[in-house]
Image 1: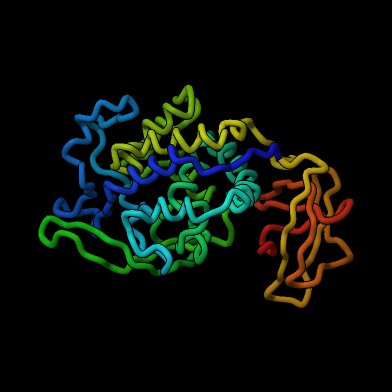
Image 2: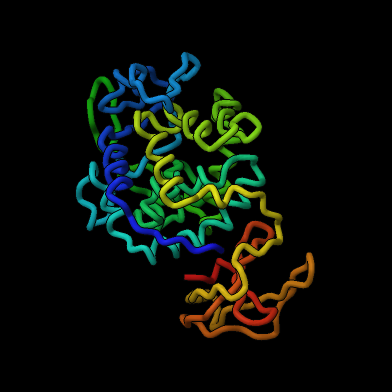
Length: 328
């Protein structure tokens, strides 16, 4: 993987602040006309001069299945909902940001390739929505996009702020999907972008690669649909450009190396269900069990990363790999 110096610039932080300011609030009941998604500047959204804004008449309401980071209960260190995005970004070091990308990029590429969308856009969404994976929802549920509901029956309950015309602002507990790993979160978001919402399967068609000539077309389409904040598209664009996320938009095969040999990182492994961490081998297009295991809660150097059947694998010896399930 090509390394890039990840310095959180004042430009990005100010953009994140502007993204957080118009707090998005989701409908408690998607069938009720009284409960609709609101922002502090909703009434001006269609009048903005931002060229990234697409607020066509076909947009009935923003996606009700998404709750954004500023409305989901932050961790104790993030007491201000309005500043949650800024604090999440400024509270992570360049090393933590790079570690997040090392983990997330192969998964985003695989999901993007499967659903025909831009990896750069999903990565930027994940960074904004989860604060580089530092949000409570990300750490407890591997949920990078704030998607509500459950995943194969698994969910995590958190507070979220909502709005209704009759009650104004109020707080409820909502269930959010809990994923086994980041990959399922990326894949779920990719599926949402490809297959839309219950009332419109083509709701996100402007993000599909066949319809979007660049990532900017895709982010423009997300604004007003995925999030109503009038700065959402420009925030995503700034993240993509600052961190050169377009380099990850190249198509990746299922069994491909996304980290160059010699580019060494350190991972820590643990298996909560056994006394050791199992390893696997790669032989062409097949995968097999290795005869050795790694000690729990130990760090290991890895110089290559591959994706296979929805999981990311890290090489720890010549032909022995550890699945992302066991990486802490």
